[in-house]
Image (tube, rainbow, N blue to C red):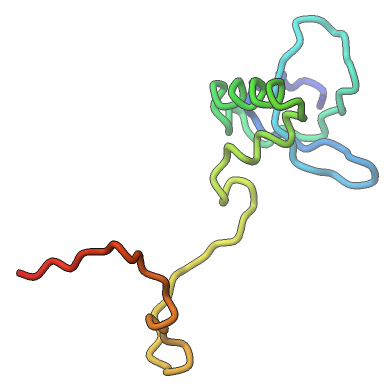
Length: 117
């Protein structure tokens, strides 16, 4: 923890060392005691407030317990793609023949009904 800085709230992003690199983590619990159990030292606090709402962190912890996995596996599943560093997909329309959609290859439901006005 950087000197002179208050502990971050649950759900805040922090930078912690992992091996020889620094990675972003999310605070999932604050201990009332000074007992540390395999907790990485905080290199930098990214958010003064919760980036992930505490109720979402609680859901991630419950999910990890229920499915016997780590909280680090469940938190990304609860975040929107942009929050977990996913790519930005921008739809576009092209007038180039080789880039147009081929609706003949699309599978439409066989029970679809056409409504005419």
